[in-house]
Length: 278
Image (tube, rainbow, N blue to C red):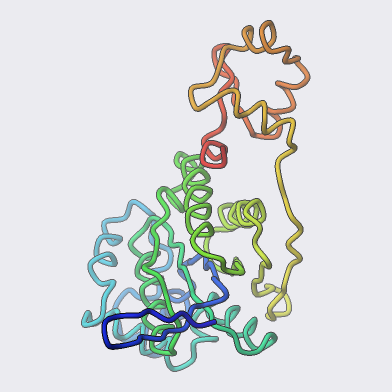
């Protein structure tokens, strides 16, 4: 598809991507780099992918995440030489491409909230741009990958980020769910299905080939959704919901079990991940 932009005495014509591919980005690049001959030349590279989120070393990777930095250029060279071997995310993307032929594709990178996550996303961004792909500025998903204490915030951030990313333009959206931490990535799949993603793909760990999952439309039961909208962000007292709005103990228990609401001190409140959806 092409769009014509008319300016005084000139016409600019540029292609518009028909597909948007969301990548959840992990640190497989650093893991593979650390095992390589090039990686062995850089001190400590074999342990970079294991850095805890609160490690001071994470700040170094934030500062290294650009061209011209010695570590960045070395890792980028490693990825450019054999992207499928170097990056789980690129391996899945290129194998998915090989099955489907030519299309205008745009890429959005969702990175963990760490220096290493952003670093790997930047490497993928620069690599793909050099191959002629249109790549959006990497998005650092707040609290993504920071651990148990931040898990619910991470889910809310993922839901919000995917909703905003998918809503831009009439793309066919695909989720590359290969990279990142498995619990958060699993939730990214749920969030993508709720927003009508066309397909989900990843590299299967056993036979190391791309697997394309069906993407049936997914939605929260309409009756539940209407009730959740009634709660608003602040929530409502349980006794009020039962007396004034006819909610039952069974309904409240079901919503709690489905992780749609939480019940604290007699107050029913939507879970943080539900709020962006509402």
